[in-house]
Length: 93
Image 1 (cartoon, rainbow, N blue to C red):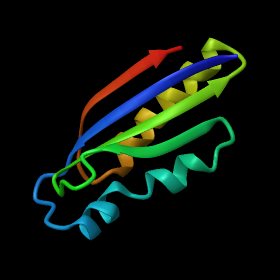
Image 2 (tube, helix red, strand yellow; image 1 turned 60 degrees about the horizontal axis):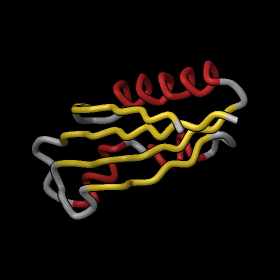
Image 3 (tube, rainbow, N blue to C red; image 1 turned 45 degrees about the horizontal axis):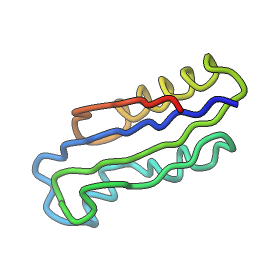
Image 4 (spheres, one colour; image 1 turned 90 degrees about the horizontal axis):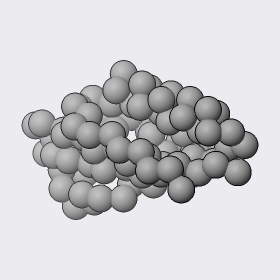
């Protein structure tokens, strides 16, 4: 069993409300939380309008599978979130 913790940090310039923040984040929780190998939550900057941090725990039978899922999450997040991804860190446990 291989486990990775992927933390994504976003900047949301011009975002003025928590409602707008949820809309601009594009439903990351719904998109990735449905996958049986991924757990996702908003982990930081909860009360800030112009920033958001999300953490995904990815589990798989091989390190390659986990790395592939992490890359997929990063790529889709960059394309779908109405903001800038500032950082993406991976920690393998």
